[in-house]
Image (cartoon, rainbow, N blue to C red; front, side):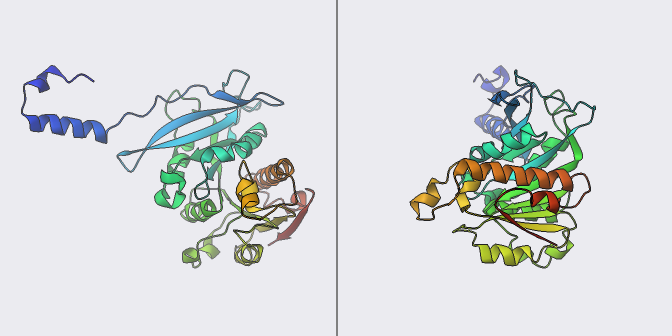
Length: 299
């Protein structure tokens, strides 16, 4: 990098200030106008990486997955409307890319999905990164692929495991239209606020989860205010909500359902819930019961 000539003849402290200014105003990547294909069939879906400013000096990376054509250019709804969206918060020490299978499946169904990164893949380290992802969807950079793509009134937030704890904090602070727990439940510190949640919620649990144990998930789901629904997936373990259940297998927590089948059912349930919740039709509990291998409890 070349220094401006005017600084070459100034006191060294000016160089320090100039360098500090550069560090504090680090340039984000240019906002993408198209993405790269995540999958091309049966419905093309693309992904793109955005960087948004957070906490004045930080750059937060957000992976965005969206319906596209076969060139990675975003598709628009045929009726001229905008797509609903989901902010998906990663579980502890699980990379956001390990949820691209779910983001891609939802995008193929007409959703835009934003997956914010967190330092050390630990979402509690930067809870408001999910909020920055939401703001990216509602106020995207001018000329970017997101401009005019998302309906700001139809954005849900979801999280897996520890990410669900963070997602519930974001939902409790307002600005989202629905909440999804994936093998998770609210922070006990938020117990007094949970009754005021005021939006549809889905708690999706694995019957054989060895981390978010089913009795605890059931108990916490019973405290969520209506409209809420608990869905237990038979034979499913904790890491089957991610790209691989190897961590379950290695710890002796053996699923009874194949990973591909678990993924199909998880995506179908999340999609059906969001279809109902983001159109003012509650939780869609009756349609959730149609998915095989489920136990559905509605409140």
